[in-house]
Length: 367
Image (tube, rainbow, N blue to C red; front, side, top):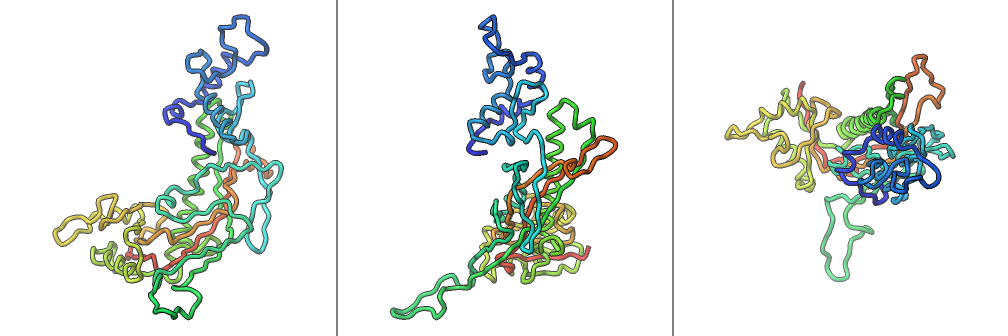
């Protein structure tokens, strides 16, 4: 957040409910108090004063970090002021469609949350995730590892302009939506829990949507994921779970095309992870310990198909994010429920592409 550092200890004390109660007890007053040693009212950033609130410290830190007011929230003297670093009023941005994909068009009412991470799991895998792209399309270029260098005699050189083969990839913005509802009672109670629950629900949908597209997207309307990309290497297990030899054969496939095995990681579904505990080596020792398999990291995700075991260099996977994650209240779209509940939605424009499909191997079980 623009270089702002807020300690974990301070954030653990942060409570909008506590801040509101403190603000009610010490309302903002104009002028100099009769007792100059008494609290001036409102919230204080000094922990030795009676009206101290961690919320005020967070607010001041965000101000110093040049975080826009609509993103940080602020205390305006009223007990119901929003003190979280989130927009106090989530509004809808204008969305347009063109033949190059969807794109965000900014308006005076558009409010975006910038600091939200689309998918920590994909980031931990090393997936390339360029942010804030514009124009609806993007071009990504990589280098095939088949012939990265060569020696030549004096006066001689390659016939082609370069050494090795250049890989080009064009990706387009595709629309991913995450929708959740929150009841009237929960939305209007004086608590800092409602907003965090709302954001958790929305971001959970965004993350699961992105991860499902990366691992198993079919290409219509979602992007084309790893298991459906032409050129990805495959192994058929012929049983409900793989053997050690079959898993090693997947690594052999990657080694044969000069994939950096030190950067390779496995991805499996929770059900497949349970099966992997029964796979042993020649000395009956398990090859999977819950974190690594055959010496390489394993990530477990319910977004991965249950019968698949994916392994590869995830740095060869790209998930460009066009614009920024937008969160809007569906009430602005004219959707009003009789019971007072409100619907919110998160929108992100993204695509998925593999720079080197051969850098991935997919094993398939029978069930």
